[in-house]
Length: 150
Image 1 (cartoon, helix red, strand yellow):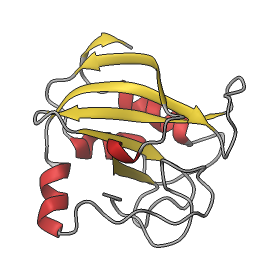
Image 2 (image 1 turned 30 degrees about the vertical axis):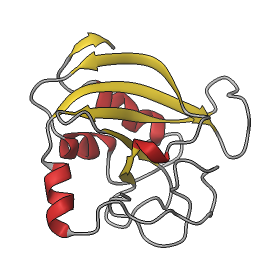
Image 3 (image 1 turned 180 degrees about the vertical axis):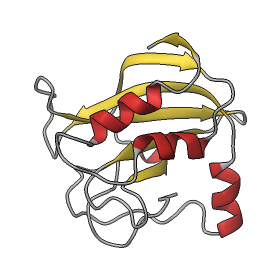
Image 4 (image 1 turned 90 degrees about the vertical axis):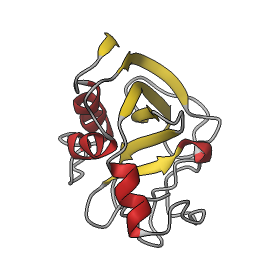
């Protein structure tokens, strides 16, 4: 599912993030999107991958987001980037589309009282490199209520 995604551009999580084709949407109805956005999150963990087509992460140069687990045990990646979405640059992707370059790094915690839409809102609508980018969005997401390593 590519929440708020437009065709073309660089939002595909499994790829390098630069202008590649996107896989088909996993959720194709407005009702399905609403149900996902209203779903309670039970766990959140910080995930990262190298930028572009790089094989390694170098210092602070990496793409990041939050992988959330829902009550039904499904996992979704919430992350942001330039031109990733239409109404928001923070998007939700089924974690099954995450490539093998994504790794869990940083905090993880159990969540109570937050849903997927809270993570999208925390990620932020706009993308501004260095000011309100994927790392800023991930930091705000990981500050949502929960217990665990932050």
